[in-house]
Length: 198
Image 1 (cartoon, rainbow, N blue to C red):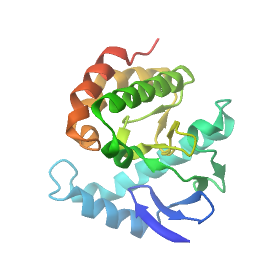
Image 2 (image 1 turned 120 degrees about the vertical axis):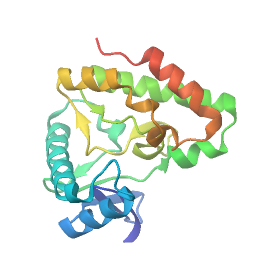
Image 3 (image 1 turned 180 degrees about the horizontal axis):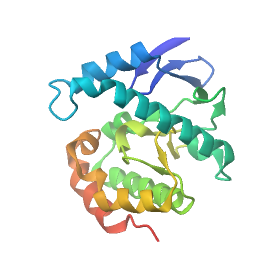
Image 4 (image 1 turned 90 degrees about the horizontal axis):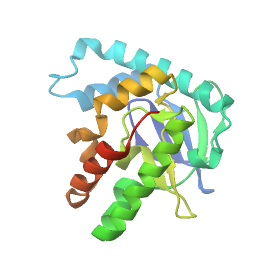
């Protein structure tokens, strides 16, 4: 089992069989990664780290419960195998942050359109990625399809989905910086125009 990386919620390991293990961070792991990534603590005060950790954990618990009960095709989430309340295995993919680097502008446009199509489907099914974090939360599977790899931050309540879309979270540097500059303007314009909640 090979370490791949760690985010606020999960540590990811390559299982060596075309699958990855996403293991929820212990409290000490979570505090440390949040501490490192929040410097200089302007938008995320250091004293709120326990609240951030607890909030992330509650969101993940809720998201995993939703995944267990949805009728959405599990291939859209990398065929997750839920191990317990928080941990899961998933198909190994190429993150979009990596995949975009090899694309021409025309190819990137096609990929962004597919990304929007996937998200419109998920919104319709009431399982929306909180931030639309295109480069980090999505990947390309072995069949060349875009999938949502981060299933720990899903919104399903109509009011929450509507409110989040109104905030346009895709139009902030935290999100746009995960794809090459040449694609950002088209990405934001298309998301602004096409992402809706009916």
